[in-house]
Image (cartoon, rainbow, N blue to C red; front, side, top):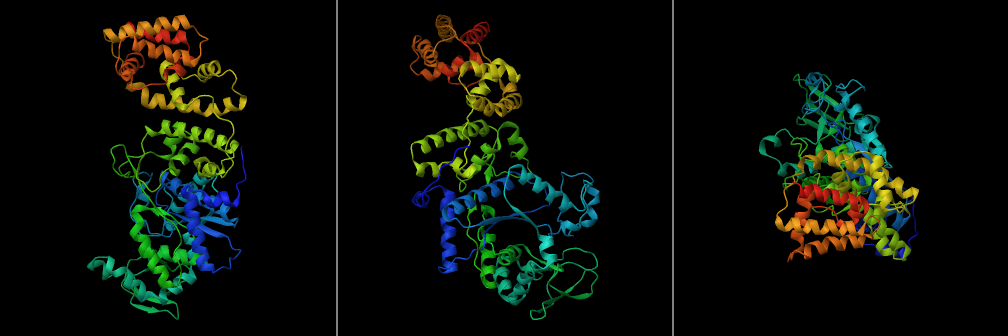
Length: 532
């Protein structure tokens, strides 16, 4: 790992978006603390709905929040904490399609997720199962966080103060929400959702009586009886936007980001929090992901990439880089972007070490990898790019790590053990990507007369150069073969070379590829193309 210690001035002038977010949080705290900072930890938060398994959006929110947290700590030196809240007291609205034993859940619709049995049979409730999966998921990536179950927070009294305050400003909350919903829903809306003492279900019913001093409400239960209940101790929960505001109030949240689809919800929750006497947290709305057709990714459509799918083809660091880049812009998230992002990650690592060596702290702080690794950036880099490794697999047709490793050793005989170790995960990634996406798409065509002449020219040049020529000499030989056939646009020659020799419309930088694969190996590929 490589570290450097930025100065206070370096940090103040850093412009990467996590630093901009951290500076906005500093301004919020200065306004609230009025020049008298407390020593309490500054609280970052993310929320999670445990009716389904963690997904790539969950990763993105925690990763991006962690980036802002690191920037804030570097900028201020103040202690921080990240709370990951599971909204597991929400009622089960529908039975998910992707679970076993679905019939087990049908009788438990609208019950808190912590009161719904686990269809997997491994935990005491459906929420407990998914919460466990969430924690394993977060731990897998080394996130530093504290987990909080909303059910525990309600039942332990942690949210009692927020619930009692919500009763005191009940009319104000109603005035905030009612204009935003339809006429039918206005008749039954309440920010307070009681849990039925007879069925255990979360009820969406109006409050018949409110007693803020006593801390009680009266509602009609499912059996028609009127019930008076305290709002504390887990007897009720708050409805969606009021719940978000109540959580901010109870936990003293300083920073939380959310997807752009929740922009209006944040505005309303912020109004409710102000009515309660609180100050909304800092944060921003990130854009959602698009598929290759430019449509929004949907779990129900299945038109996105899962965490497991990304990690089959590239490292967690490359996924973190993708999350870092342009969070306020809608980005396409599909399989073709994985190799590019994997190579971009290592390019940023190389650039970071150069920036540190040159004493350019500002650029080092704005480099994505500083934010991905909290300043402790890996020093060893793989000796070849992921794209080149993919092309090696593609050309050789081998999935044997020893063979691929041998190609790389030949190309980079001076590679250190640490650099070769950095290569190891990439070998498996490249084979998986080739097998799943490239192998069946290869489509060779016969070379036309002009391409045949260029290929013969290149073949003869490679035989003359032999195995030990420089990368640049091989690259020049490829260009010369095209120029000899008077290609006005040399790109046409390269396209023809890729399509006839590699069976694809795009391909590697040829000098580097021939150096790794060998002149004799390239000659063999050319001979096969000429024989088609």
